[in-house]
Amino acid sequence: MSIAGPTYLAFDIGGTKIASGFVTLPAGGAADDVADARPATSHERAIPTEASRGGDSIRERLTALCAEQLAWAADNGVEVSGIGIAAAGVPDSATGEIVSATDILPGWKGQNLYRAFAAVTDLPVHMVGDVGAHGLGEAGYGAGRGRGIVLSIGVGTGIGGAIVIDGRLFQGAHGVAGHAGHVPAALGEGFLCSCGTTRGHIEPVASGTGLRDLYNRRLEERSGGADSGGTVPAPAADGADVARRAADGEALARGVIEDSARALGECIGGMGNLIDPDVIVVSGSVVKAGPLWWDALREGFADSALPLVRPTPLVEGLLGGDAPLVGAAVAVHRSIA
Figure 1 (cartoon, rainbow, N blue to C red):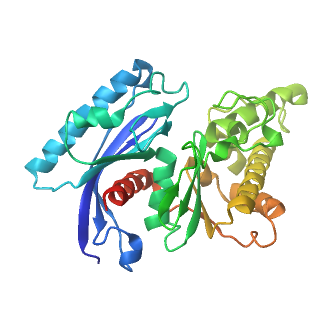
Figure 2: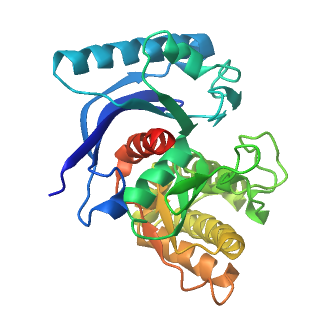
Figure 3: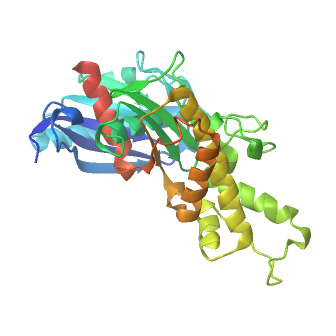
């Protein structure tokens, strides 16, 4: 067991909920420093984002949650070294401003979280994107641990990605590096992407909502709309519903799972050709779709990847929902170390 190091208050701001918890990193603060280093999370709390109330409301309730968490830490003798934020949208890590956000979070663009947090604490604060934080967590302490170049892909309600090089997040010139969901894919032609295009991105056909939308469109297009047993399947409620139908042997659902995962694998193969990572970590709710999904993903990757990239392991993430909190703690630790 490793010796405990600094403790950080971490936040993960998503479209549905705002999660928070205290993350204690091992002594040294980085996984490479101690062979069996593991972070520990404690006093985790979550509140609904209530995105429809707008960005000002999110900011105000976020800082109120921060004040409550810091009060708990003071009452329980927890020394907090800083605050790490994993934020939805495209945050500017230098200024603390959200420079871009989709309509899922109205009024979120333009919010300045560093200024907001300064009103409730004088602790150092550092913010990165939520998918970037997820990648930092998996690279440092999860499935990418010990690898120099990690490509992290999150496949859930949407699709995001992160590139972590030697433990540091590569954000690009405009903070948008790693937006894996917006890679072109023929399967996505005609489906509305969260970025506004219908010209063919992978996210609207390979995310959880994408699986649902692809299934339901094919259901509508089927001649007669009847299954082999003569019944008409109801539209799928979500991606998990499609996965359940595939597991039960429904041909339409199995075809959707296979085509979607294969297309995503081809896109990841292209990313691998560009980045040449040591490992590709795939996380999120959709990875629970089962062997059918994973087999098709790996087949698509193998078809698209260059020969030297093809042996790169595609592995499932290990940290689950704690990954963004751990990554946010790593980010603030790196910023003040």
